[in-house]
Length: 402
Ligand code: CTP
Image (cartoon, rainbow, N blue to C red; front, side, top):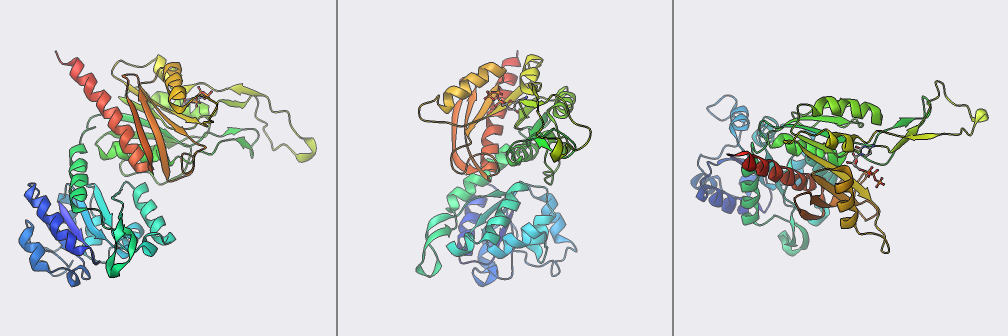
């Protein structure tokens, strides 16, 4: 693996991370930025790593070190990741060997930021981190604690032991889904009233994209059926649709050969019975929009499912104290749809669901699974959903053994 070190005070902790990685049997190629060498000596890291430190695109005997490092790595870890490094990576600027290596890899990347609280909370850094996460980069959040100069706050590098544990988890997941075809839906459908107006909902598609990215990272062949125009995650084929009917056609075709279907999209339950061919003029309105039910794609897939297929539904609910709990609603929906898993969330809770970069969910399964994921970013929620899918697939494989 490549251990990238950028120039912050926490660079000294990269030495311990390096030590722990090599102790665990990893082959570690360290890459330092010029600023990193001001904080920690090259000699120290070279002595503990499996190869000498590399620093430059030009000084190496190899003509193109970044492509060899990027293509050959099973994992790249950046410890610490400074605001500058994060910004360059998010913007696709390869100004040194480390950023060039990050752009020249298809391996999983774990970024471990460390900086002062003001910098970590600056909108530029917040947006760059969100961009990296959307592209499937793993971010190990900094902790709160003592910072350089005696300040206290959020921005302290995650504990070296936690960094090594996160790296081990990422390596364990590699190839877990190899050979599995997956269909994921994302976004909210739009049901046209006339050529300019539609009935829609607040779904942003971010959770569906995060699940597609996570499945692809674990080796699945992913087909994403989406109503939103976000950049596709690496290696994921996207079909853009608009209505529930178009989504049903695309999902049905793709699901025929898929082992996993994740219906993360917010599909309209009702659509206008008739769509006006031309724009309804104000003086002709207000129109009487008569609605009819849309096909329930998830329930249909579950009715026609193959025994080896794992089907996941979502439930966006709004919970009130006097009403049923999220767990009760999730259990009812699991039964009603006939799905293997339901991922339920309370979209009225702060930071949860539509349009946010964060989510909090309850995953319930037909096999009795009941797993709570507290408020976290959508990539972590995606990892928990894919963990649950993986367990079901592997359980099925075990049952199929003679
Ligand atoms: N879904 C679907 N087709 C529809 C409506 C929903 O496939 N026409 C899927 C969604 O993608 C999601 C799950 O079903 O995975 C959500 O179900 P939801 O619409 O919330 O459940 P309903 O059965 O409509 O129940 P209610 O709206 O009453 O909660």
